[in-house]
Image 1: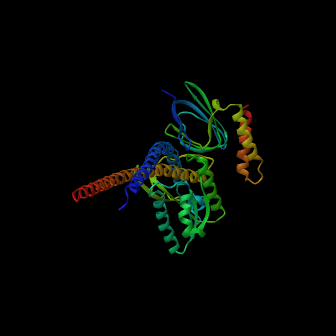
Image 2 (image 1 turned 90 degrees about the vertical axis):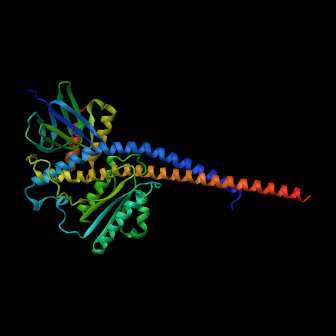
Image 3 (image 1 turned 45 degrees about the vertical axis):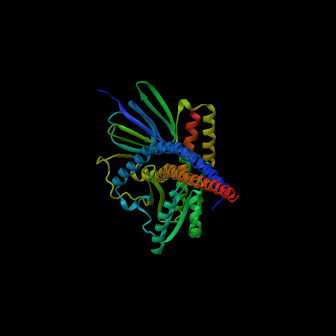
Amino acid sequence: MSEEFKVEIVNPEKSFLVKDDVSEVVVPAFEGEMGILKDHISIISFLKPGIIKISSKTGDENYYVEDGIVEFKNNNLSILTSTIFNLADIDKSKQQDLLKQAEEEANKTDINDQSKYLADQKVEVLKTLN
Amino acid sequence: MASLDDLKKRISSVKSTQKITKAMKMVAAAKLRRAQESAEKGRPYSEKMNNVILNLSNGISDKENAPKLLSGTGQEKTHLCVVMTSDRGLCGGFNSNIIKKAKSYFLKILDEGKELKIITVGSKGNDQLKRVYGDKIIENISFKESKNANYFDADKVGRMVIEKFEAGEFDVCTIFYNKFKNVITQIPQAQQIIPLNNEGEESSSEESYEFEPDEDEILSNLLPKNISTQIFKAMLENSASEQGSRMSAMDNATRNAGEMVDKLTIEYNRSRQAAITKELIEIISGAESL
């Protein structure tokens, strides 16, 4: 029996990625990383900045996301996000740009705890990309 | 009757107008295709978002303590209307249709003695509304610089709306935009986004979800995003509608100009013929009298 399921990533502009031969997806859920395999229970959660790792027969793919919602139902994983990049497409300068933005955001003093936490997360993740 | 020279000038002027309207039609047609594509591509996101929220709000245990964005403030005193129009004119009834719809809604609200606040998106709507409702407009946003509707612009509007909501500046928020049906039909829409009105919609599944963290937290995270998403959807629909409306308006204009050129050409030829006949008669009668 196949151990594969379908994943779909959409951002507001378009359907970013559709794959139906995925064996495992690791998403940076708000309360920690979460690995999803086939026949996972239906779940809704949201994401913090981090890396989505998609494993399939053709190899692993990594995506950087800043926010989003995941919904898993009937072996269909939907990820809604407004900011997503394929790690393979991020080069040094792009990464530096994002890092700078994130640091600026994190250094703002007039934001609430949650956005502060998210911004810090963003900085941390971007730093590890080096 | 106009002289031959005048007619000639008229004809050439109408012809050059026709050239412009024809070019505008072509441009609109090209843009329409793009806008329509992005409207279609954007649909899955807002649909999925809606679905998730529907599932969530059905699963929520404690309706009393539901986030205010979902359940409302409990009163309906101040209404915020976000009127979304285009930044450019010459697109037929596109802007007027939205304004008409919005104005009838404004009247209803004012009649009920409620307070009205308006945010206009797009300069054309602002132009039309500021004459009558100038004092009610609290904010005017225009995205002239951005070529296509993009999510960041929508997010800006969304954040502003949420900020104002959290500051307690209004209780109910409605957005006005044109829904794109096809090239000739655009339907002006009024959609209430705060509080979220999804009663009557059936949840797509009876299945129960596991939530992580709990429903309330997800909802309070999700709802602001949904506002931006709905506004973005409206912007996409609007831009497709604008191009469609402009295309059919310019098509009509081109056809009318063609008709006018035909009419003027006939008139020109007639008067030219009349002048020739007159001259001939003069010559003949001059010759006869000799």
